[in-house]
Each structure stands twice: as structure tokens, then as C-alpha cells.
Length: 159
Ligand SMILES: [Zn+2]
Image (cartoon, rainbow, N blue to C red; front, side, top):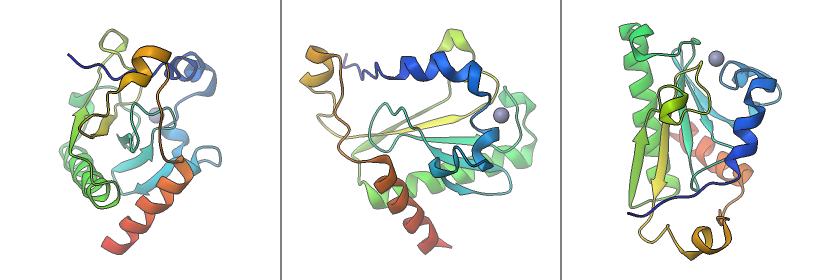
């Protein structure tokens, strides 16, 4: 089994309690830079501590922790935003595949447990290379600012 290591995430996880909910603060000044697009029901952001280049988080606008707390229109809105996000990544990064998933609760690996969110992690053949294994570090080949700009531009062209 190949593993995708992201050791820098530990600082993020340790700081979450101090900073509050990043998804609810998505409209605020601090995390505005991470937002790619927003709809009535979903907020789509770049993960600033990514597992891989282009790691996107899709969250409902409303602060809920569990799937069964979502109204039907929020479920549809969330999946519409998820589909849109994947199309943007297809266009901008052209990955070979994706890992898409939800971690519910700390025991399942959720860093943020209070606000439900879906991870989209683009994958390329060979993206689990020797760097994480030997050096405990991972090379992300593109800056988050540059990537956010590209994704926002791609989104603007679809609307
Ligand atoms: Zn929240």
C-alpha cells in the first residue's frame, strides 16, 4: 500500500482549537485568500496544509458536524460544489485521479470535527515518491497563491 504523508499537518491540527472554525471564518479577512468560490450552500477552499497539490475542501456554509444534519438542498448544493471543484481541478491541474472523502470525528482522522467538509485530493501516477518516505517531507510543486488564482480564473470562465 502506498501512503501519502503530510507531516506538516500536525501544526495545523494543534492550532485548530485556538483559531476557531476555518470554514465559518472563510468569509473573514484571514482565510479569504484560501476561498476559491462560494455558493448559497457551499464554500470551497484550498487546504493550506495539503496532502497533495490542489487539495481542496468543500464545506456546507452552515456550521454542522454530521451528514444527517444537512437539509436536502444543502446536500445537493454541497455535491454540486464538489462536482464543480473537480471540474476546475481537471482543467487546471489535469490529475490522473482523485481521492474524495469525508472524515467524521477525530477517531476517523478529522482535523476539524465541528464543521463537516469533503476532501478532494488530486492524484498523479507516481505522486507517492521517495521524498516522504526518506525525509519525512513532501514536495508541493506549486504555490497556493498561484494555484488559487488559476482555480478562481477557471471558475470565473464557467459562470
Ligand atoms: Zn464552522
